Amino acid sequence: MIKRFLLGLGALGLAACSGEPAAQVDQAHTRPDVMFEADILAADLSQALRFRTISHPLDTRASWDEFQAFRAFLAERFPRIHAQLEPQDLGDGQMLFTWTGAQADLQPVVFLAHQDVVPIEPGTEDQWSYPPFDGTIAEGYVWGRGTMDMKGHLITLMHAIERHLENGTQPQRTLYLSLGPDEEVGGAGARRAAAYLDARGEQAWFALDEGGVTILDSPMTGRPAVMIGVAEKGYMTVQLTARARGGHSSVPPRDTAVSLLSQAIIAIEANPFEHSLQDGPTEAMIAALAPDMEGMAGFAASNLGLFGGLIEGELMKEDAGRALIGTSIAPTIVEGGVKDNVLPQEARAFINLRLHPRDTVESALAHLRNSVAHLDGVSIDPWQSPSNAPPVADFTGDAWQLIAGAAAGHAPEGTPIAPFMVTGATDVRAFADTADNLYRYAPMQAAMSDVSRIHGDDERIAIDSLPSMSAYFYTVIDIAVHRDHD
Ligand SMILES: [Zn+2]
Image (tube, rainbow, N blue to C red):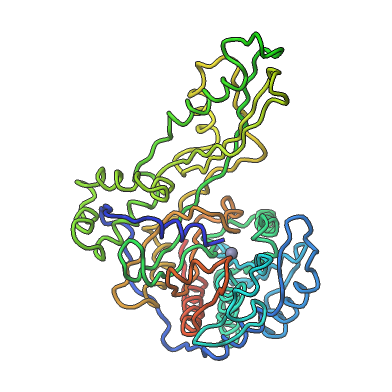
C-alpha cells in the first residue's frame, strides 16, 4: 500500500519548500562486520514470489493453500526463527513471533510485514516482461508481484533476525515480528496482533512497517532522499442528508431536498479545513530536503521562518501538496429521487475526509456541521467506523535517532533523511495505541519509476538493494534489543 503516498509526492511539482532545522540525525549506525549475500537473498525472494498469496476482501481463505505453503517455506528457510521465537497463528494466518528479552521492564519493539499481495489485473498479464509469479531473476532485478510490496522487505527482515540468532544475540528488549495475511484488504490480522499485545499489557517503544523508501530521484530534489513515514492520515466518511417536503414537482417548495443538498456540499467546500506546515512532519521534511534543493526553492526551504508562507502557497497549488498539510474533503456519492416529476423527501451525499493529525473525528464533524448550520433540514452523520490519524511519531528523539541513524548508515554519504506524512494506510496503524512511535520505512533504494510499478506491471526490486536492506534491519534490531532506552 505504499504506492499512493509515493506517487503523491511524485505529483508534487514543487517549485519551493521551507524550513527550520528539525529532524536531524546525530549519528549514522551500521554494522559493517555483518554482510549479507545478494545471491542468497535474491534466490529466497524469488522463491517467496512463486506463492500466489493473493488476499481476497471477502474470503480470508480464498488462497489458503498458497498462504500455507508460503508459511511452510518460511519455516523451512528460517529454522531458528521458527524454533526459538515461539511462532503463533493468531487466526487466519496472522503470524506473531516473540523473541523474549532478558529485561521484562523494557518496552518491546515490533516489526511488521505482510504476506499478501494484490492480484494481477485481468488482461494485463501480457504486459509483464516476466511472468508475475515466476520470481524471475534478470537484468539485475528480481521481478514479480510482491517484490516491493512487500516480500522483499519480509525476506530481508527475516534474514536479519535469523542472522542474529545464528550469532547468538541475547536480546535485552523483547522483539515481536508480526506477519499479516491481509494488509491489502483491510489488515484485520494486524489488529489481532495489536490486540494480543494489548492483552499482554505491552506498550511498544516503536513499530516499524512499510511506507517510505530511499528514493533515488526525489521529485523535490532530483537526488536521493531517505523518506521515513512518521505520520499518516485518519479516515472518515460522513453522510450528508437533506430533507424537504415531498410531493408533485409541479408545485415545488423554495428548497427541494436536492437543491438543499447541493447548497450543503457547496457550503462545505467553501469552508475548508486549516492547511498549514504546522502540526505534522511536513515542515521538517522540507527542512531536511532543503540542502539538496536548488535556487530559490532551496533558499526558501532553508529559511522556513521567513518563507514558510510562500512554501505553503506553493503546496496549496498542488493536489498532493494540499493533502500533505490539511484535511481533505471529497464528495464521492450523491443519491436521491426516483422519478423526474416527484420531489424526493430526502437526498444524500457521502463525503470522504482524510484527517490531518491536527483534526479529529469529533472536531472535523463539528467543523462540517458548522458549515451547514444555516441550512434547515440538513444533517451530517459519521458513516461506518471513522478513525483519527495515529499520533505523529517522534522525529527528533531517541526512537528517531535509531530508525533514521541506521538509515543514514546504509544510504550514500550525505543523503538527507526526511520524516514525512504517508497519505495511504498501512498495517502499522493498528498499533496506534500499542506502540509509542509508528514508523513506515522499507530500507530499499528505488527510482520513482520503480515505485510506480507497485500494484502495477513489472514490479521489481534491484538485487543490489537486498543486502543493505538486511543490513539495515540487522543494525536496527541490534541497537534496539540492546539499548536501554527507558
Ligand atoms: Zn504493502
